Amino acid sequence: MKSKTTFFWFILAAALAGSIWILDRYFQPVTPTVATLLPGLRADAVTSVQIIPAGASEITAHRTNQVWELDKPLVYPAQAAGIQSLLATLEKLIPTSRLTANDLRGKNTDVEFGLEKPLFSVVIKAGEQQWQFRIGSKTAPGDSVFIRVVGVDGLFLTGTDWLAQLPVKADDWRDTSLLALNGAYDRIVITNGTKTIEMRRDPTNRLWRLTQPLPARANEQIITTALQQLQAARIEQFVTNDPHADLTGYGLQPADLDLWFGNGTNLTTAVHVGKSPAGDATRLYVRRDNWNAVATAAKDTFTVWRGAVTDFRDRHLFVPNERVAEIEVRGETTNGFTLQLNGTNRWTVAGEKFSADSETVWSFLKQLYDLRVTKFVKDVNTAQDLQDFGLTPPARQITLRAVAGDTNSVTQLQFGAAQTNQVFVKRADEAYVYALAPEAVGRLPLSGWQFRERRPWNFSETNVTQLTLHQRGKTRLLVRTGVNKWSLATGQGIVDPVGLEQSASQLGGLTVVGWVARNPAEPEKFGLNPDNLQVIVELKSGEKCTLDFGLEFSETALCAVTLDGERWVGVLPPTVYALALQYLVIPDKAP
Image (cartoon, rainbow, N blue to C red; front, side, top):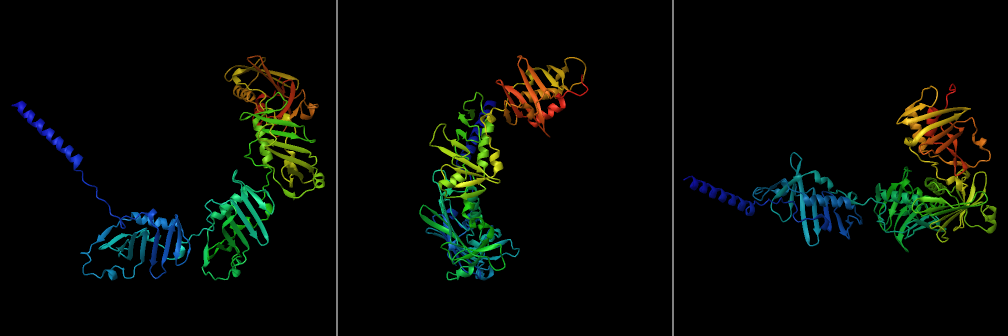
């Protein structure tokens, strides 16, 4: 009996499980589709929009090649963002409720629901498809609005927030950009009265060059900033759309300033700039080329474009992104030297045993790039002119090569005579003579030894066995026996073990700020004398590193080390100088 009952329940459970599986597999309820107000509408497929606001002119815009343009009540570039935003909203707009034909039976719907004189009438087209609807009055609370879609029975209600996206006048959808370049231009022509300035962008390095009134390197930063400002600028007010307006009264016939943009030999678009409106010196009348509208825009937008040709010339002497693998310095005012790049970041000084300090070399290149032309002295020069400027031969010549020894990839700077407030300079590949500030030229290094690696040694404080201090005829010996464990070798006295440990660490990683002398004939001029502090660091290997202190300044001092049998004088970093004053100076009362 039990076995039969068990079998029965087993069969029943299996049947139920199978039924559940079948229902789950084949009889899932269909998720109801939420109907939008305008089924099938896709914002990206729309080709035209017509909107008639109550009591106002029809506003129509069409899209061709992804560009929106107004057709009515005037022809003008349209504000694509505003149109696309509205279409995206309508694509997803879902009615909150619907009144069917039965609900409306016996009612004069056009009058009762504000559809006889709608707030807006809208027609949207996408190829052969069309959606048309009228927007009637709002409900009593004001949070919903009645809508009739042509060809669909009944009325719909939606929220009202989206109504703010509908234009009530053409200006709501007019493009307020001054310029729409889209990046497809490599030529700029500026006309300002009788003055014409032309620039072209090199297709290889994408840098701008002046072509009129003279061929010259252009100020990339000035031009880029001015272009960004121009493209970001917006029309503040449309003044007139009359195609027969007297442009003379706006200073636009002829224009005070014309900015033309093009590609190759073709000038494709322009902005024309006139005078200021009466009583408003902060704005100017403007007109986009090929469009009738006269508008106003901020005066500051055009300040740079009104500049002289010198304002657009590059005041640097070379482009910083050019590769440099060799720097050769020659001339009567220098101790000639050559710096050469080996690999990616290892520099050497030709003819020297020591390595060059990469940071110092890059700093030198930055100094050269930072040289700013203070005056464009003369653009056309005779041989006598160059001699008068001290440029034949130059007092100093700096040659930058992209490849060491390559005479083809060269930028050469020639420095001439120095006057009270300027130094003449020119590039070998240009005819122009420039002027530089004397103090900027005076900071340039004159000798190859100034580029020596700035780390005289490199050791860890864990390898230090003792420090020997000499000062004013006294000697002090400090012994290290472990981490932060220091003591005087003889006699009694108090020392700061943590401070000494930190001092030893800083001495091991010493990097001078820069070298100021090599084998000085008169070391006393650098404050180097026997009474000054001398620190001798003795390492576990038996090696000794000696540091002599020289002239002291407010936060640092000169120092001297011996490297490869030569005496080198450098500038101590402030941190090492501060530690030496606090922990390494022998006290006056010490024996």
